[in-house]
Length: 221
Image (cartoon, rainbow, N blue to C red; front, side):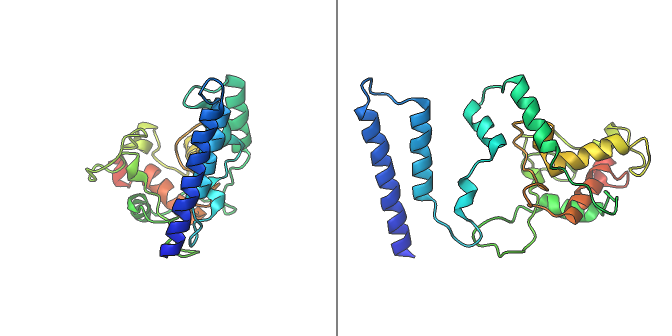
């Protein structure tokens, strides 16, 4: 264990030294955005060691994430944003049984659960959604984040009285798609792509759907 940590520290130190030397070597004493990005990637790869289920491929960006990362917080070109959303929308998969609503009580447990995807988790273990980290959902929970909008009364505010009805289908389908791959609706969304990335399975997503849309869920009371 100590040897692994030592190797990681040495590798990271070497990468940082390369970064500093590269900066000094430029005629102006400054680096281009691309050089800074390349050096940062070197530091990340040198300091991140595979352990358990946490593999180095977590550092790889797909086209959508790369475009948003390259934008460095600035709005994407409208055409590019639309193309990213269209490509991500193609990844949305609906359940073969056509059922989108599960058990809201189980959905609350998933929303509260922040476990999963760490090196100490075992392959195949169910992940949590950690939804309260970013959203207010149920009124009873006083500790919640504000990165995302409040989801309290989510279904009620959207007029969902029966999630199985034809009138509710547009918002029900949208909600499933949003949970499956949020970038299908907002190119640089901070929300995890729960279904697309395999973070949550379809049954877990159905339970979250119930939490948000079931009129009997405390979210809609």
